[in-house]
Image (cartoon, rainbow, N blue to C red; front, side):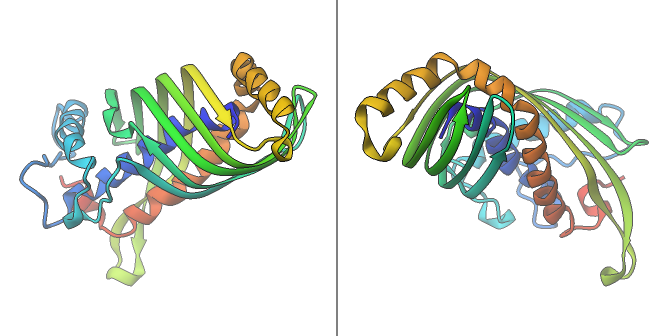
Length: 257
């Protein structure tokens, strides 16, 4: 994978594990999980503490809550298309394996119950990724094409996640009140990245080596060009993911008073 895609994985890795925390209020809740009530005057700190208590258990997963093992984290497939500008690439990534996602630090939580809005500040010391990739296009006016394995190592990752939601009556469950996310915003920054793509240019080692050097030398520039498109793509993907989780539980189960 190119650096411009790998820079989004810090968020992907955390959201897959982190959004599953919403299932923590299931009736079969484990003892190590702390329930946070909407009436708690220290709700923000309660949520942060609850996430910290859950984090050590994410590595092996929590079968009781249908939370899969997050080390490594597996993402089946992601596609992205950037059609214009200095970076114009169509690419597909499959069998994505992410390591380091459970080492995240939830730096801050801010919940606005009246506006149904949540803001999270997250830090990840490092993420390591490997995936199968196919790619075709141009990066900073240079052609790039390839199909094979992609590797990435990312450090000092900061992300801000903001979600907007709303209540709705679920007619399939006696018109009980459920919750869904209507908007999902992501802003992420990576301190440093190194990447390598196997089998670029149909195995031409000279061109492939030169492109890998170029990508590592210019990863910040490439990432800056791709950042808006990547943030939109990730937000759409994980708003859908979050809503599939929220749809399993009435609001009073997920967010008791």
